[in-house]
Image (cartoon, rainbow over all chains, first blue to last red; front, top):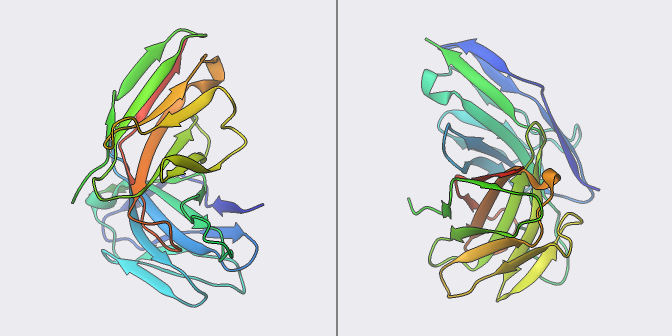
Length: 118
Length: 115
């Protein structure tokens, strides 16, 4: 079945440091890939996504590129801020399936806690 | 941005009791979901719901679980006879459609503690 493996946390960085959170996946076909973020006391929010190989998702200075050859979707940001402190989840949905099946079943990684200090 | 609302934020119940977790999805959304996260584990899919019926469910979603959209605005998850291992954070989510790459909107969760 499908699975997602994320870099173990927690990750602690100083403000303006470079961030990488590794994510690799196992799936059949061509899944869609996502990064969700959860700020304290809030629900998960979509940060960025990519739906086909070599696509780059980006939002709020974060980027991730869908690498089919390495089955990876690593999250990067060039200069983190204190406000980026949150839990980051890598996730995927299944590849295209004939018959109109919903693609709302997400398979998540274990989450990575990021803390950014001033 | 519109929000998915979950109530209560915390619920404590005794083992064997029935519990209902409530969610108000975003009003124009058509697909609804429940996920859960046991402490220290991954967020897991439980069930998806569309057009007043379950469209997909996981192995976790056994006969003890049921979902309902009783009045066109609320979406509920019922656990008929709670077990200790049902203790988890339960997240409701909704989406406009069910297509590839669809964005899910999550509520902030209900922390269920079974004693």
